[in-house]
Amino acid sequence: MLITAAAVFAQDAPRSQENQQRCNSTPRECEEAIRKMLSGRRYLGAQIIDENPGLIVKSTSADGPAARDLRPGDRIIAVNGKQMMTASVKQFKQSLADAKETGKIFMIIQRRGAYRKVELRLEPYPKAQVDKIIAAHLAQSHPGAVAASQP
Ligand SMILES: [Zn+2]
Image (tube, rainbow, N blue to C red; front, side, top):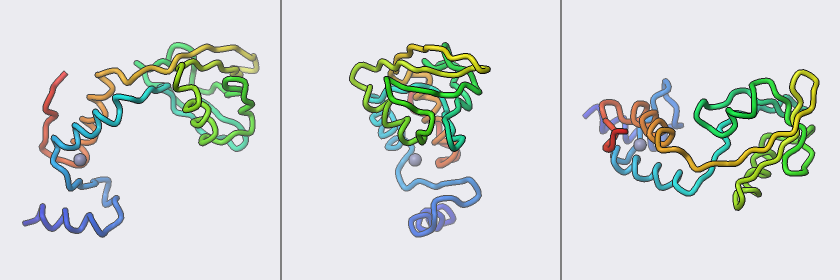
């Protein structure tokens, strides 16, 4: 009864009540949908924030392509020939999307005042990363559920 009431409520209410978002799909459906969604995607593995003006690397994921060449605090100056000194995060993401065919990203960054050229390659989501994203969703929206395929 409680679960049904919460699920019905979630359809009408804004999707954040105390950090617990309930999902109307089964855990298995969600897992399949997430795997499908991520299978064609490439990722950089860096969180970029807008310093207004300018873009800064806030963090990199340990197993992502950015971790090898970018450091937290790096300022992004240019991406594939496009000036990024006054760009928004949205524009940055667009320039990554534009490069998704080749996956090649040439960046100019500024680290502690010095300019550096960085060459990166966007990569498909590794299985471990996908499993982590699924586990996070299940933990948040399907309490008690366990991923169907364990790593
Ligand atoms: Zn779900």
